[in-house]
Length: 228
Image (cartoon, rainbow, N blue to C red; front, side):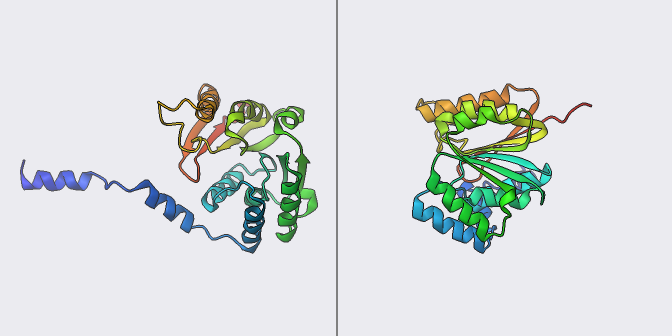
């Protein structure tokens, strides 16, 4: 092979970038405000689950892209993801957030209040998502964010798709099942549940899905707009 050919091949082959480097860059690029910093402190004190800054920014972006007025969230935590979602929603939008831990709800209310969020923009429901979601309106939400136990993902995805309006977006956090879902030899309950949830989305022709490698992995799917 000539020197010229070798040079051309080297130019056409993109460099292999360590995924960890990209992840660190994505996280470092996001600067959270004081309200989010305080919400993280509350989350750490409670041991509540939380999302990374880059995942939060992605949620905010998706909410903005669909001009979200009505959003439902499974897994309130200390309000970190809620603050990010509200940041991308319309100013008259309402976030419905569900969590069975009353302590988390108290922390989230404090987080929303610190950020200056009007009480009318949040609806906090203390209860099990498996019992609350079936009571919510069909096709009533612009964005559904699922951040519950991995083993519950299939049922939450099924409910979330029912709740989603045409043109809306469904987002599943920890779609990687803590990194086990891509391992064909992994047969744990979490991996099996995450795969089942992913197949529910993949098998729905009305959905356009993508895996976003941020945090513990996001699986996002946009529902086709109405043909009317």
